[in-house]
Image (cartoon, rainbow, N blue to C red; front, side):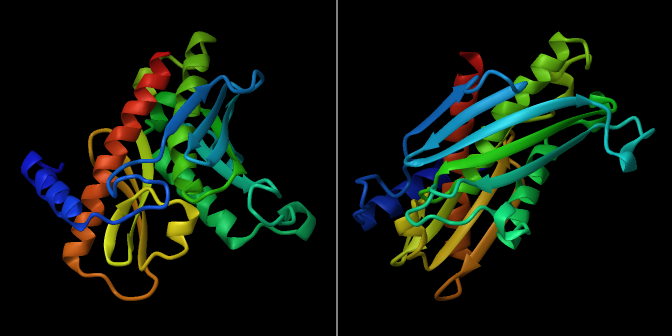
Length: 259
């Protein structure tokens, strides 16, 4: 957990740099975030998450029973799939179903979302039930995987509440050990920044995706140096920025779940 003194030092350092971001944000500021529950009426959980111009629909499907390899274990299962609509991006991309195979990036992001959600779920408390998460990117402007994690958690909560109401599980609160969100950070022209849109992400010297629980522990850290290696001090600043961003995203999740 980042202490107040450390956060103040980060703030002073970032303010002294005074970089200009194309959307006018401060370097430690999230894009506007909106989480809409019950976005569609059929799934047990359905959420639209908007992070700036990135929009992802996250649905959660609850079923009684688990995959064959999980049967008779007494444990539940949570899994996720990620995909992007053809015109979510500036140039149309063919559907992967047309290509006949799922791409490596799609597999990687699907696994990331699943890992993050399983990290905050008590599988024993689920019993032999399953929740399948589908994250479909409607519009992409950077941070689609992190938005997917953040929105998928809210859809997961709604699906578990539905399951409790319909007596498929004893308690949604017992199943959920913690919350989870994710955010991107990066170094642009030597300056650490929070929540990168595509134009910044494509120019990043270093970019990183950080998934954290509500209690401040890390589930996933994906970091890559694109143009030059980064040092330990830069890594610490990026992780502190991600901690700040995830705290704010988790408050947005709580607000949405109270509404």
